[in-house]
Length: 429
Ligand code: UD1
Image (cartoon, rainbow, N blue to C red):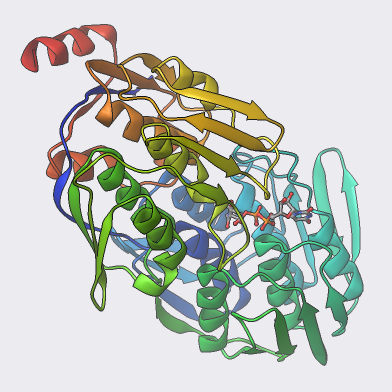
């Protein structure tokens, strides 16, 4: 099993280039099956989640080709399998194939998604949306099946702000008869990017980025060429890495507007932020200051950036409070961080953090994607050596994470066994 071995203590300095947004990519890939014409997608991140989605799409009978490391060509005219069981179990976004295939073929089945274990993660709002459009949805033998004679537009009020439900309903409604209105819709950048993609295929979606989205169904969608937006969370992760290691990183190929909630917190914590058109520079010269953070749907502070800021606040002066309001089980990594010397008490959905002067290296295990990245940041600041196990979670959503960190001066290597860890320690003694 591959692990990262890290020698901490180096401030990260330099430039890093951000890739395409994973969470936009997963939805866009699924929606590419909604036309018989060829779809070309650029800025596709090369990560295990996007690769699993590509395999799942290929298993339907669609033609899928990576024409370059970051470009994909899909032609779904030969789809013959509407129930996807293999490949997809690992990725939660498998549910996007429900909305896509239901919209185009009026039938779809996928294995009930699991994904990162960060809470209950129900899909009742997706089901409510499909049902409102006229589909019958059944769950049997671990498979969720949706089918309809015809889909008909509807007025849907989401009970919770859900990225997944908003996107899934947009897909099915795009090929339904008549108009659909989604109220209390998610406003995340990848929701907007996804709507732009579907519109480039001939869909008629208005209002994405606000909490009311209006969709006029169309009979068919056509081929397109599309470039995915930069990944807000990958960018944010490097911003927090700069802050925690007292570094100076210029994060390139980003949309600074998407990072404002993170930039605002970093300024409160005493960092300097310099924005240009498509880059953000984070400079941290002194000890971070405490602050309070509450995760919220966009434009609030993202839940996917909660572990990273908790790690940074664990080194800040004073007491900080982080409240997780989206997923109830997202503080599991705190036990691991405690073994690196953090002083954090979790009470329900709140972490009370008493900043310590430093972390110390330890062997820790990544419990999920974003917490895994946060533990890497902690190890980069820590005194001595750390080993991060279960990096398969990190590789779900960060392309070349270790290489990008090395380019910023981090001492990190991906290793297979203890012998290689010993070698790393000797080399970096
Ligand atoms: C997406 C992201 C994930 C991010 C999350 C919130 C992808 C592939 N994943 O996940 O990285 O952390 O948005 O920004 O894009 N909920 C329900 N019923 C539902 C659906 C959701 O109660 O049917 C609840 C969830 O339990 C959670 C909240 O709504 O409390 C938000 O979840 P949602 O936005 O749907 O998250 P995902 O789309 O799964």
